[in-house]
Image (tube, rainbow, N blue to C red):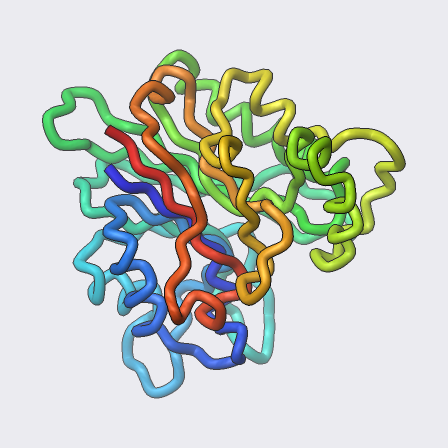
Length: 268
């Protein structure tokens, strides 16, 4: 089983263009069975198209799409199109639901998409959670994580996945490369952390999630010249023995298809 998480930059590539076919080519090249997407406008219609971009992408890949709205901004680019997280999968979808995380004044509303799929030869469903945490403040991310865990706790002790753009540094990454903190302003992060270690990833590890990308610590942002690791595949402890590897995926189009690199993990 291959699992991908990918922030698609509101459907716009780093070159400013909307190219659903290009995104499909990048995702298809990974041979992923499950694809978590962040920064998704839906049901937004690309210029000249009669179907929403998410439906077009799902059709190109032969996958089922699920969407969870976090907010409904009124932007010139996507007027009144809800914005949030999505999941594409080759597996049968048994159920899905979108949840709002704790709202914080002055910060964008964030959400959590919960999907249950049925894997081949499995009697029990696999839960997959997709989120995108605040990009401005570690303190706000911690609040959002606390809300998120009120949903994921229902799968405690069962195999499940938590995927997405967490906009957070891992303490071990920072210990090896202290200069990573200097990259936070590139995310718009105005955290007043001083010498305090980032908390979000550490809390998830204490909750017995395995950070699938920790072995190689390869950066995922920005796509053209990756400097910082903020996209994650977190694996619940019962599923961790099946993890084979996890690393960013790069092709000749990933530098422009989005401002993030996709992150791919493979499980036995």
